Amino acid sequence: MKLKSYFFSILAIIIMQVSNAQLLKVNESGRYLEDENGKAFLWIGDTAWELFHKLNREEAVEYLENRAAKGVSVIQAVVLAENNGLRSPNAYGDLSLQKLDPTKPNEKYFEHVDFIINKAEELGLVVGLLPTWGDKVYSENLGEGPIIFNKKNAEVFGRFLGERYKQKPIVWILGGDRNIANMEVLEIWRAMAKGLKEGDDGKHLISFHPRGMSHSAYWLHNEPWLDFNMYQSGHVQHFHHVYTFAEHLSLLQPRKPFVEGEPAYEDIALVFWEFMDFGKQSADRVPKGVLDDDGLIVDKSHFSKGFFDDSDVRVHAYWNFLSGACGYTYGNNAIWQMYKKGGGIAIPCLYDWRESMDRPGATQLVFLRKILEARPFDKIVPDQSLIYGLNPEGRSHIRAAGSSDGSFNLVYLGMGQKAMVNLHKLPNSVMGWWYNPKNGKVKKIGKFPNKGIKEFVPPSSGVGNDWLLVLDDEKSALPKLD
Image (cartoon, rainbow, N blue to C red; front, side):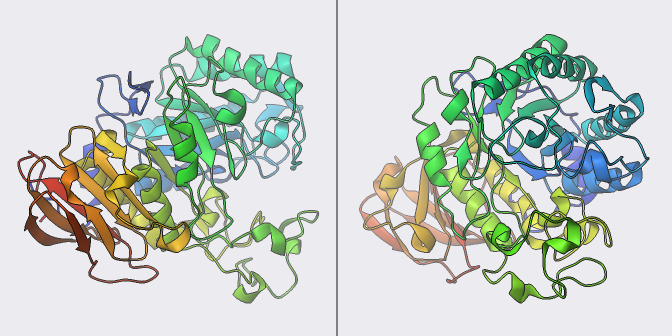
């Protein structure tokens, strides 16, 4: 078996995934998720918060087929959306609720949600479904809201959703970019979780999506309804030390899987909130001249700290997986808000949603999936002792992992920096490969004894020249990478 370095065709990927998406469960190890047949589930997500709210059915199909073709396995979307999702209708003019009442859902709106969830299932995609964005519950970070949930109606709404989507391949995600402000708020989320589990007979897993620089375990790790943890590293800096979340969560008992649910989005400005006035609406959030007539950014200098790109996507994805995460969710600034030219603006975009679907970071997800299937992610065991010498934080940081069966080691070099590696971690002689995360191409290094410290120098270095060093036990049955 050889790992091809070119893209799978859209048809091939769809065929690969259409074993039809299944209900997920937590593996008995507590380290990762698996499907109903006990196969490890690789969570490579995409952030589509406004999917139900902004796209019509033809657009939604276009989007979902594009993501299935890129190896995405989870689509994260919100029923009661962030961007004025209660007072502005969907693409067909339908509001989500009658009179802002969670106990009175609008059937026409949910028929559109049904269509999209059914299409996702057809393509083999799991939907990470947020019942509501967090601004509909009280928090210390106000949004458009309005706040509509209390303990009683949260349970009713949860039960409605649970019953409606009982048989669908869904993972419930509570929270919606908000932390838990007090015990009253905690009781509301508990009530919604109770309703969901009663409605779907406990068929679906539940997690919680917190604000940036936070993780769900801080408040909820011992809640019986929280099946796995989620963290958001956010949109603050390049080479964000996302692995610290993983290191912390891996030590908690009982052991629960964890997923990076919102890292830095491709094409979003670093610390964008410092350059915007969220007291105003849409294009008025930035000074005149920053945006063109389509509402797209024309003056990038206004966001003086720059923008995240595909290099950030790759670094954070590989750092997460090699640190023990069982999942990573990609995001793009235009995709999450499904921005259409001339439409309402949440955070100014470089491109519209359709132009953004094939941005480099999204396109490279297929190569992430390929290597994590060739060197199975469920066998990855973080092991920084593979690295000999100093290993600073930031751009020069190196992440390393072994495998639970001793068949391979992985070392990720985010800047193409050289690394000194302990070779004695593998039981037999070692076969080495360079894997290029940008295009999936492989360069064979050769065979060497499994002893001592060896220096490895990647084929190129510098920002945007990241490499994955793959070290295989020569006697393993792993597929060759050339």
